[in-house]
View 1 (cartoon, rainbow, N blue to C red):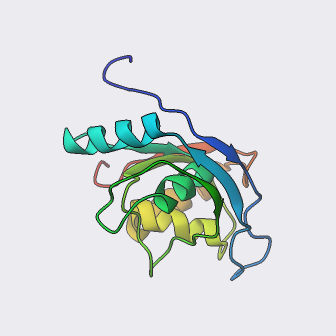
View 2 (view 1 turned 90 degrees about the vertical axis):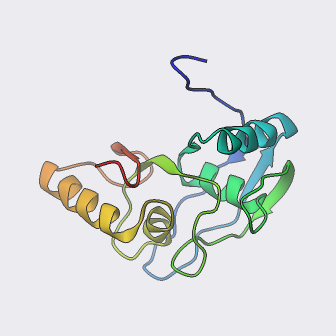
Amino acid sequence: MTRGVRMAPITQHTGVSSPEAGEAPAPERYDVPEGTADLVNLTHRRGGRVIATGTTVTRALESVADASGCVTSGRGWTHLVLGPDRRARVVDGLITGWHAPGASHLLLLEAVAGADLISSAYQQALTQGYLWHEFGDSSLLLPGRC
């Protein structure tokens, strides 16, 4: 732990975001160990934030969360699609690359950080010439902290 930041492991098998606007993301395999679930829950109980590194981690954590945001360990394949109909319950922010307009992963970013923040950050990414998709530039998105 450094300056209050703790890391927790998740095994993931990353897919590629949907290639076409309107397509759901591909299923992704994950394993959230008990220690990680416990640390996520403890972090929230203590008023801390859970920051996911990427959309795959976000999908994994949200897949093992109940309606109140309590996380349990689990493994399997996630088919979860986050967006306007399913907001994030566990992840409070994330580090992510940028996705094409209409891509399902862009809706996932909105489900975590809100449409206004994503719209503003997206415009900055365009203006600054960020590189796109899974292997491009990354941004830290923290809602409510501009």
